[in-house]
Image (cartoon, rainbow, N blue to C red; front, side, top):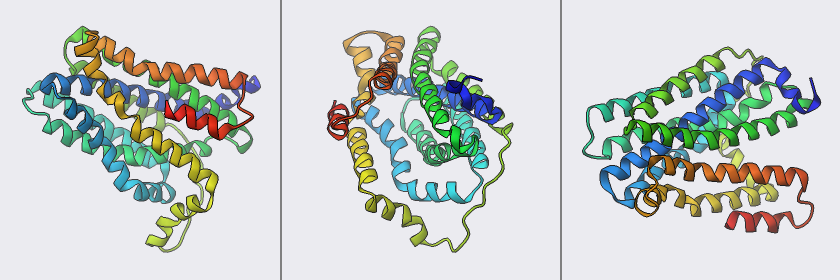
Length: 293
């Protein structure tokens, strides 16, 4: 196999990429449908912000516990549970929509559950990849993983917006997402990895907080994480895209999907550019300018 695709020689890596692609596409499809449905119900931009908050808040509150769990529990088992839970969330959204919604509060309750699952899924997904390939092939696996993730971030919103527009309802979007989550669950369940030795010792608060102490000591990591946090906190305007798509551009759900996919297209374009013209000077300043916009 060519060196550029060496990571794909591992069957477990191929299955994981399939699962992660389906999970990301489903999540992005669902995000488009939820945003459009909530704004269609209330016509209040504030409610779109609450959609984001209901999914972001569990991650902030549970990130230490989620990281600790990913270190001590079999990561494949955690991902299996998360994928199953994601599917249940989608089915709950189907049930709420079919029975008729006059208030958005039931959606927020379901999204809180979804955010809780995401809090455990994200660190586990990142930590699972090194178990699938040899150390020498890990950089190639990371490159392909990032590329496939960006492709999913582009395809997912457009697919969700198109399905919503064609059906005039979010039900097909949520139903498709539920099925895709289950297919992802089947794919990851077929992966066979040798379980690494888990750290032993007392499960104390000190052990859980060790990650924060490490970040504080390593100023390079602290700077990169702080910069990304700054961008995430001030980049939430994407949550308001249903307002632009519906009331300003009059583009419908399909237009919303295209707007949501645009950042993924830009990320892919920049990845190609940076791959051909790597940043070799003043990387910190360049990242700051990039994150600011």
